[in-house]
Image 1 (cartoon, protein in one colour):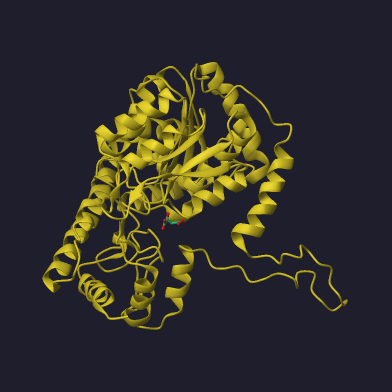
Image 2 (tube, rainbow, N blue to C red):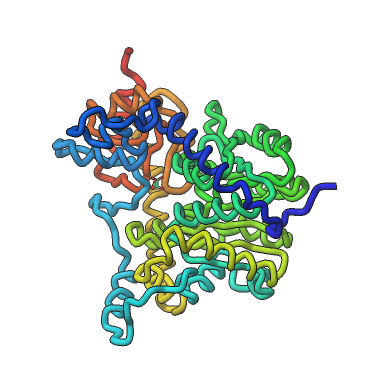
Length: 450
Ligand code: LMR
């Protein structure tokens, strides 16, 4: 008998010790950023108490922007961080967001009081409806608890800490590869991180067999991180049939799905289509977690707006779960910020604003899809060796080009094109004007003699 997935067990006794151990290991082995003679005392009174610190490396993704900003070249191009740019290469604030912000400023009754620990109530309700669907039985039966968190990262971290405290299995399986922040978030949350095969470099597609084998041999009850759509960094998603296989396997082994939904609407241009994998897991009545971000789909990057939803078996469990999530949030950041969530709630609440948003969202998704075609055509017209069809097959913000670290550094040095070392490029940072420059750089990188 496979034990049922349950949030009711509480094994918090050794949580702090275990987390401290994990933290210590993490900093020493993963970051390689502190002296291994841990915390030596200063030798002279003039020495800083922090003199033993080594300089930490820049973040592999956000550090790309740091390097880009330092480059004086007029042709430089930042394809590192996943942030949408217009055809003119500028950041975009959606019109609907600007309008709502104006309304909020003019509302005399608005104040800046603390929010409750769980955030804006309406935002939470509407976020759950956005990801699960307005007619979701889980919502109607009050089996979902949703808590406003600090974008996707904060939602994953709160969810991870909640699981480390209250869930009977403390291992989370994450895809290989995955977003570089995932292993750090979950390790520091107190979970033990393992990987499952996801990407096949040879086909530049899904390693479906490897995925099934690895999840099939994961201990029963393990948590499984799934990208809801537009997998970061590969741009490779399972087909609906493959999702169904994955769902059956996960449920048959009582694994606990934890979805990271950072790109709803960005993959296909449709909010409903991109939420479909999550919705099929809710429809089977099982439990799951979802971290939602509004960074990309509403362009609210710096507002840090997101939500953690936990779908439970009953309303009673859901309300107890929420009471415990509040205990995770309060000592971490007390309660979330008000502005971004108020924008989202206003848009999701009003039919006209919502429609306006979906039109702007679709335009962003379409521009990215168009960039894929343009880059593919540009490489073909240059006769660049290799099969580049993965550029148009992959979806979402990123293309996992298959370029290696050495080719990436060549492109940065010679062409001032900035991207992560795994060969990921943000298609959202590309424009019709910059495609030829990128295609020239890729062509030179793959054809040059080394
Ligand atoms: C990315 O992968 O580029 C984005 O999700 C931004 C980030 O925080 O890493």
